[in-house]
Amino acid sequence: MADSKTRKQRLRARRRDAGMKAALVWLTPEGQAAMAALKQPGETVDACFNRALITLQRRTPTGTRDGTNPEAQA
Image 1 (spheres, rainbow, N blue to C red):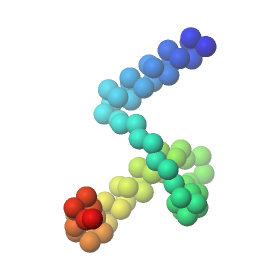
Image 2: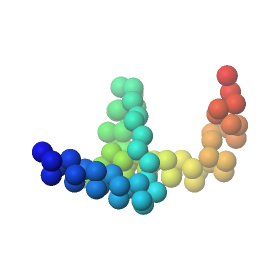
Image 3: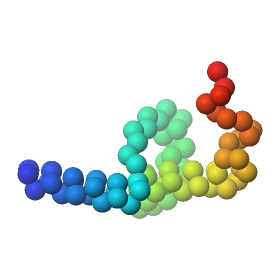
């Protein structure tokens, strides 16, 4: 057990050093279905999510759908 814990800590540290950030994301059933449809065979969830975000960002000049700041909306 101690070996697996230290291995996980090492992997987390390596990812942190690479500039990655952990995030917990809860998906609705619709979001889960969309993820399943977009995910390529053998692709990890994080790789699929990163690919989807990069594609969306490239398709929208400001990174948002309508050019507004999503945090400014109430």
